[in-house]
Length: 326
Image (cartoon, rainbow, N blue to C red; front, side, top):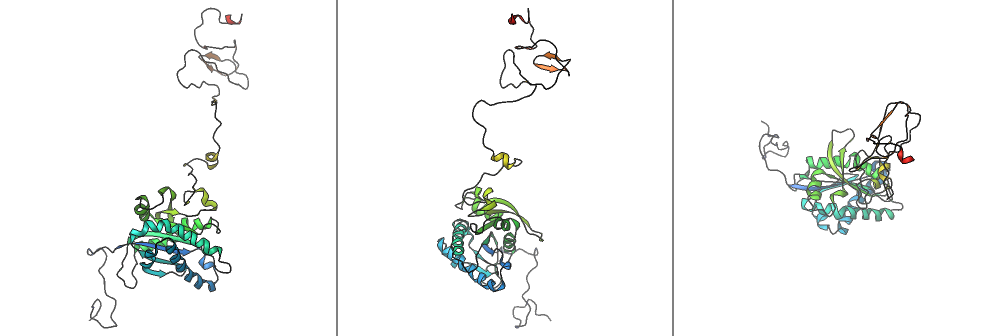
């Protein structure tokens, strides 16, 4: 008889069986904030440098949390783990607004200082993924696994956050962060984070070769290069170009002040109520014949025979119409 699922079985027993999903109701795991980072271009470094990078990442994270006065977040981190080219841990979700700000900016400053003095060592640029969701957390091995964590790593691998570092200057932009929609809605849009929602850029997070697509939000503390033209900037930001408007047109200087000029070839332009007649001056290229002049319009094709007409064209005239010329 099998000992499967029997807690009193010997050391050689199989893992304890769990109930199938959707078979019965169970308690939801506690919600945790998730912080995950990846180093840009890790596999492009020589193998001898991989260990150095793996050791440096948690050291830089710890230093940045200390500088941001968030040592408690680092000291109380849940299910911490190195991913080789990065690091991941959980935290109490009430800290997430502070992780977004000021920590992301402090991480940027910490990496800037590190890279400035990294002569002869490996420079570091990090992608950061932030999420909130239910994860197992009982102080056991393999805690922290679940959909929320899987999605966080997918966000880190998504095209928008990778492009943010690829299209920016390595000497300026050291951090690019991507927030899950849940994280943005709760911490940023809810007003708990010391950064306005307009500083975050909505993106569609997709991962090449994987069936993953989610709404997410990009934030870059110190933008450079192509990033200076979009709303993912953490500081000074350009106004977004309205949909359908060419960027060059949108960037054109405003028209000079003064009397506006309105051109309407071969027609009248009225703004308001017109009393009496109207004078129309049009430049006609080529002869126009056989036309009839009525009420300020020219009908027909060809030359227009007759007198030069000013004033109320098309009005009833009593007396000599050309009397004013005498």
